Length: 259
Image 1 (cartoon, helix red, strand yellow):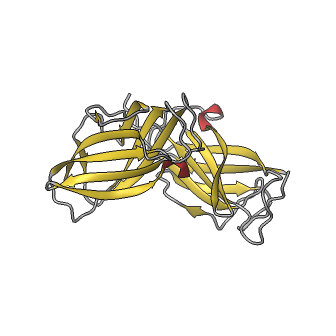
Image 2 (cartoon, one colour):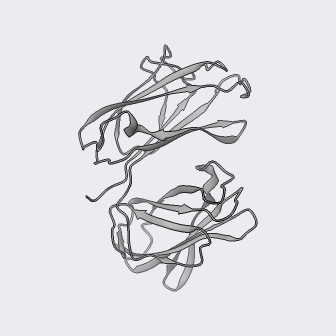
């Protein structure tokens, strides 16, 4: 069965346990979020007490089939991202979920006593639930030291992938680390009419719990909107991920056709 990616991404400023709340921000969902419940809180920012446990629930309507729903919850504390929870929503839901299906997913979180008290926004919580895409074939490894297990590129299963100008695509790579990495800066470039163009930069540790240990399996993904100024030509995108020492961790070329 072909698989697709569905992102359910919610930014919720500090939450509690089960009353419909307003003031949260959608940061890229493809599912339709019907409501979020966060305890007695009805308006963000909701106070979190250190040492207490809170239940956060999300009701949504699926727009695509989902065979798996791995998620992670991160918090930004004093400007630093913290991964505070990971799991799979299918542990409590009946998967695969189908387009049009309404589900309620919830999780409990105990606020760490080491988190500092903050006056207004105690926590910024992002829930990212992803469904596996169709695995793509036809990409080329260009010097990885990590073991690339699979690459996913939306509904594309065979390169060159058709990328439509103005549309947004999510690229995901699952790999097994072979060395320690405390940071993972990456760069995505495309060869446009014979010239390399950098189209995206970042650090994979913004979504992973770094440092990464040898033997650890991780899935890193990024979203890219194809510029409308690009000509409709075949090209190749290169994703290059380095470690804190500047060494290559992952490098892969993905042929695409811009349309």
